[in-house]
Image 1 (cartoon, helix red, strand yellow):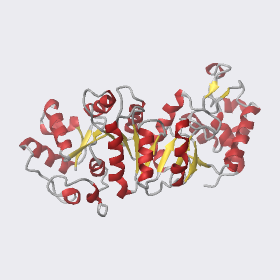
Image 2: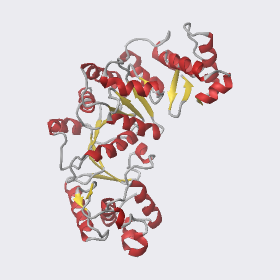
Image 3: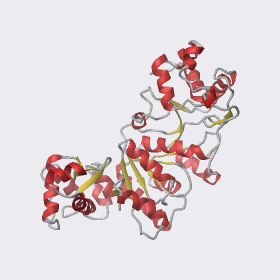
Image 4: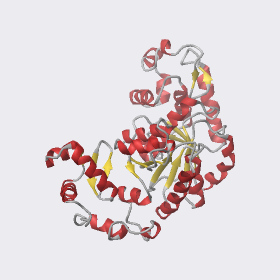
Length: 400
C-alpha cells in the first residue's frame, strides 16, 4: 500500500490532534477512508468524531506532540506541525509505518489499540522472526543481570528479535546482551527521535542501530514524560509473541506490559525469585496468580512456544529435559503422551486427558475430571515445573 506525500501529511496531522487516540483515529479512518478526506470534509460532520472542546481544557499539553493544544482542531498549528514532521522524517530517513500498510509490524497490527502511525529508525527486520520482549525493574540485581545474559546466549541459536524499552535496568541489560551475541534488538521509546532517554544510554544507540533499531509513536520533538512509558508498553507487548519479566517489584511498570501482553493473548513468562527479594515480588505474583508461566531458562520459553525444532538447539540449553533431552521431548509430544516415571497417578490421568483434549480452561478441566479446584491447581503447577504442561492466557492449560 503506497501512501502519497499528501496523505502522509494528513495522517501526521490526524495523529497530532489532542484526544485522538488509536481507537478514535481508526473510527475516523474507517468512516472517511483517508485522513485527507477527513480534513476536506464538512467541519461540522468531522467534529462529531472528535472529542468535545469541553473535554480538552485550554492550555493542556498534547502528549503526542509536546505542545500546548490550540482550541480549534483545524488550527494551522497542526497542519504546520505535520509539515515539519514530514520534512524531518524525509531528511532523517525515518521509516513511517501506517497501520493499514503491509509493512506495519504484523503482531502489533493485531492489537486493537496499536498506534495508527509508528516511526522507526535502523535495521528493522521483523518478517519471519521470533520476537521476544524482555522487561523488568530499573533496579536490576546481580542475579537478574546474569540471568539476562545467560538467556541471550541460550536463545542465540534461534536468532530472535529482542524487544525492550531502552530504559535503565533490565531493559538495557537485555539489549546490550543481545548485541553481544549478535541478535537484532529493538528499543521502544517513550519520546521522539530528537531526544535520548536516559542520556547515559547515548553510547548504546549506535550498537543497537547496527543490527536493530528503534520504534516510537511520538513526534520527533516530544521529550520523555511519565505518561509516555505506559503508552510505550503497549507497543512492546504488541510487537512481541512472548513477553518475559525478569525482575519486578510488586508495583513495577513491567507488570503493566505483562498485563497488556495477556490482553493481546500473547504468552507471558516470569522469572521466579526468593520471596524475600523485593525485585522478585512482581514476578512471583504473576506466577502465583497464573498470569505468567514460570521461566527458569530458555528451555521453558522454547518448549512453550513450540520453537524446539531447530538444528543443534539442545546443545545450548544446559542439559536434558526429562529423559529424552529437548529434541526427544519435542518429537515425542507430536506422537504420543509423554509419561514420566515421577508422575503420580493423578498427574498421569491429568496429562493424558489434556494431551487428548487439547487446551482447556481450568474450570472445564475440573468439571470433566470431577476434581476440586484446590486439587487441580497444585497438580497443574507441579506438572508445569516438570515441563509437562504449559499455562496459557485466560487460565487455560495444555499438554506439552
